[in-house]
Length: 109
Length: 116
Image (cartoon, rainbow over all chains, first blue to last red; front, side, top):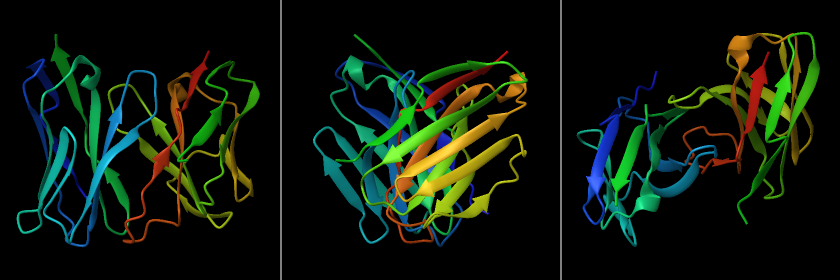
C-alpha cells in the first residue's frame, strides 16, 4: 500500500522567511500530488497540486517540486505571512488516496 | 465554484441518540467521500460513493451508516456512537472515483461531532 512520510511535523519561521515541507511516497503508480492547507476549525483546502509529468509548479508565493525518481515532492512557501500559519498535508494519489502526516506551520510576526 | 457544504457544523449527541450529518455539492462530481479526522492527525477515509453506489467501506463500524440519495447529496447516519467517535467528520467530492486518474478531491468545512 501507499505510505507517505511528511517532514517536519512542526515548523516555525519568522515572517518573511521561507518554509519548506517535504514528502516521500513509496508507490510508483502515484501520479498526482496535491497539497492541502487546514486552518484551525476548518476543512482541508487545496492550495496547489502537481502531476507526474511536471517537475515544478508555482502559484505566487507557493511552489511545489517533484522528483519522481527519488519519490520526493516538496512545498515551498516564500515571504511567509502570519495567515500562512496552518497545518499542511501532502498527498500522493495512485490507485488510492493517502495523506501525509501533516506539518503544523507557525509564522511568527 | 468548488464548494462542498456540510451541515451541521457542530453536533453534540448522547450515546443513545440517532443523528445525521449531511453533505451537498453542485459541481457535478460523481464521487463523494466521508472522512474522519482526529486532532492533529490526517483525515482517515471511511466511505466512498461512486455514481451513488457504495464503492469503498474502510471497515467502519455499523453504527456509522452512509447514504447517497442522489448525485449531489451524501448523508452519514449516526446511531449508538461512543465517546471515542468524537471527531471532525469531513465530506469530500471529486469528478470521479480516484483510480490513478488524478482527480482533485475537494473538502467541506466539516462537522464537529461530540459524543457524550
